[in-house]
Image (cartoon, rainbow, N blue to C red; front, top):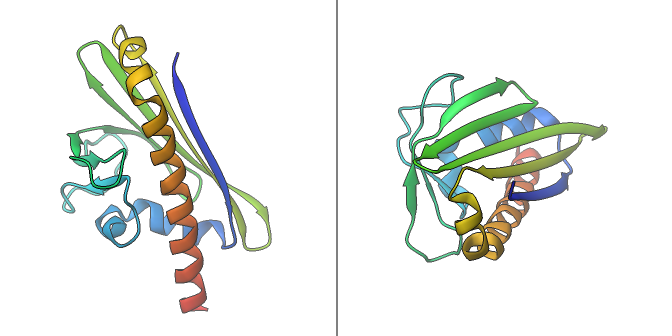
Length: 149
């Protein structure tokens, strides 16, 4: 099963990283990988949201409607999107690694008949997108935390 992975340590408490991650209507301030397509649809377990993905900065965005399958406050967000022959699951995990330190992990797993077909074409760009988002989340969450405290 093809997959992607990004991890980064963020020098802020877990609740601060969580707050930045789940408020998708504010992603345009810091996130160049994922975009909110409908701010009126927040992350709620069991519901669909409208998002867009831009693997490379400046490329055309691809819209998709994933269903939120898990929402564990301050800990884990997971969604699944499906098109015929392809299933994509994104998992965002936050772990406390010390006082005011959080480890952010973003996994994406592809499955279905078309997953092996698309994987070679998107592998490098998708991996860069996940890493870019992790770094941008780190910068944003740390900046925001310094502004507040």
